[in-house]
Image (tube, rainbow over all chains, first blue to last red; front, side, top):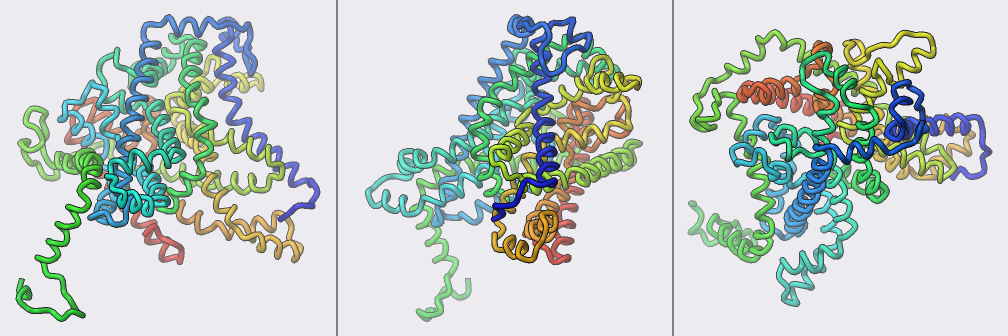
Amino acid sequence: MVGQRKFGLFDLLNTIAMALVACATIIPLVYIAAISLSDTASVTQGKVWLWPQGLNFKAYAQVLNDIKIPRAYLNTIMYTALGTFINVLMTCLAAYPLSQHEFVGRKYWMFLIVITMFLNPGIIPNYLIVKELGMIDTVWALVIPNAIWTFQLIILKSFFEGSSSSIREAAKVDGASDYRILFSIMLPLSKPALASIALFYFIGHWNSYFLPMIYLNTDTLYPLQVVLRSMLVFNEGSGSALVEAAALAPQAKKNATIVLAMIPVLMVYPFAQKYFAKGVMLGSEKG
Amino acid sequence: MPDTNIVSLPVKEKPTFKSKMARLGKRIVRDRQLLIIFLPGLLFYLLFRYGPLYGLIIAFKDYSVFRGIIDSPWVGFEYFEKFFNAPEFWQLFKNTFLLGFLTLVFSFPAPILLALLLNEVRISWFKKGVQTASYLPTFLSVVIISSMIIDFLSPTNGIVNKILNSLGFASKYFLIDPDWFRPIYIISEIWTNAGYESIVYLAAIAGISPTLYEAAKVDGASRLKMIFSVTLPSILPTVLIMLILKTGNMITIGYEKVLLLYNTMTYEVADVFSTFVYRKGLLANDYSYGAAVGLFEAFVAMALLLISNYASKRMGGNGLW
């Protein structure tokens, strides 16, 4: 629409501003990585900026030899894998019937589900339900109570709606059961949508610290984010906790842990990015 | 049912209770497979979304773990009164509203501005690159973001203090200074969310008809003029919807981040309803008190959402419903 204009003052200023925005998000991450790869002396003397000084991998070796961190990493991988699987399965099971216009009670079910987005009972009642069900200090507390995110359910339901009714009718005529239609026809057809919701669930599990912190009591069950948190805040409430933490946890080691915690997210990020706009738009349509 | 015996005319058939039930029964039999597929999801919602709502009655009871939810004695509004009379009440109230309000005021325009400026970028690889970078922080965990904040602001070797020192200022311990808590929280919120939230506005901008720009160009409008008289008015409905949503969520503070960034020195500005619920309810095991405070918070949040929705409709804008 505006093709032929020349690169003016406005463009120059705008380009600079946008470059600053990009730098503001990237530079902190580069800085973290640079510290994790630098030697202790350079870090304490504050010589490190955006390039590692005295390049070495000692901090990573420390992390790998730590008693807690490798185990926490494995825990996180396990919780994320199991949790994402349960999330995607449960979301599919709920979304498919709701995507069928004929489904008995569809309007009522949808109302029942959507209204929960506005009703937030708070931390304590959620905790008590988990406790009453005997899930405290088990992996189930992390993967069952949030098995379906309503927002993702609505996105998948809309996706199913886009392709389903004629397919289902045709398959029904051929004598296929709904189980078969869902697992052998709908799901293979919905791979992009499934990938999208799986990525959001994946990142949600990988980054979660609050729920594991309140639901788990045993050290050996802690996921990475909880261990990382304990490297930040030593004991809650004491004003000098941050000073102690800063002195006790060697910066390079902490930053190496952060880098390792970020890697999986950075790896799925390019794939996730493709689906952002779609997800956000669907969400805002449904408001 | 009085009219079951009346033979109804074929044109004006009024479904009786019986015939409705029969039809419902038929539909249930017809949809039995769908119902079986739906069952796990339904159970999930009843147990984990409606279950906690039922659990909220402990806010009106003196809950003890041994007696359970049902057998704990009723105490009415005792815990609410306790909260309203608590010395912390007004401080929590003020902190929650002020932090929520200031975050809204400062962080709401950021994604709009970003989207407007991004839209003016002509070089498409550069535009894509900036977008890719700016969405990234949303996907980092709160712990990592808080850790970076603590590191960068560290008085011993944080990068911010290094810069201050090189400019000749003394090091400052930002995280124990109550004056700095709100700015730190708000800036980090903008850093985390502005890029991702700009997607909605970019999509709205993409939907603007090119003829509007062509007409403006024929009239000799400058770039800035076009932003203010074409782009901005066109995305205004989206902006309004987002504003209602954000106002409704205003007091839902990101307590996960506050819990990581606050300390006793900054409680006076940083302690909000939800962090108080966490400390009283879970750390001190006073479940009923925690639930009561949580219920009060949810009540205020709901009222805010309804008010902002009403206000938007009154002003001639769109509402959420």
